[in-house]
Picture 1 (cartoon, rainbow, N blue to C red):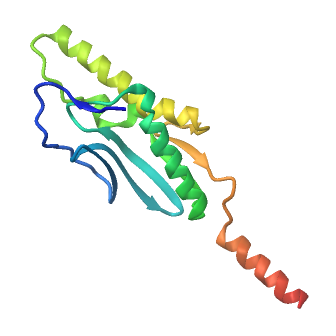
Picture 2: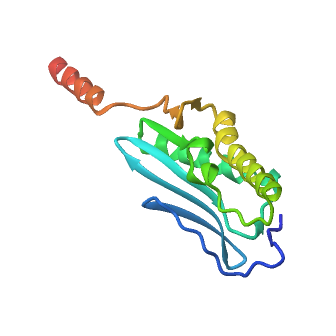
Length: 162
């Protein structure tokens, strides 16, 4: 699989993220893909899934689905209660995309393309992986989650039996 920069884009990357945990996939010495998330109250929340500007990533790579599935595995291993992924329509880039266009028709066409890409990246990945679709976030509940309270109660039961 070859990832190639689009013509006219420099090798430098300018992506801003708004989360304390950022996973960057490098390809050919440059930043290619980004996942930004945070963990709070036993929930891993994915805020951003973004490709580097000017880089064409083949659709059959399914990188967003792979990244989200990796977050589900982190939740299983670290005993997190759930994984949230932002809904496409809740993102600033969906509501107000940065679009440079000469005409209103060109603007609408680019905006529609960006929105379709965001829906594919966020909402369709969540659906494929069994998330429950919510208003602002899609939610996956970890079936293996064990609450601290349950562990404590089980420990007391064992103590009482001894």
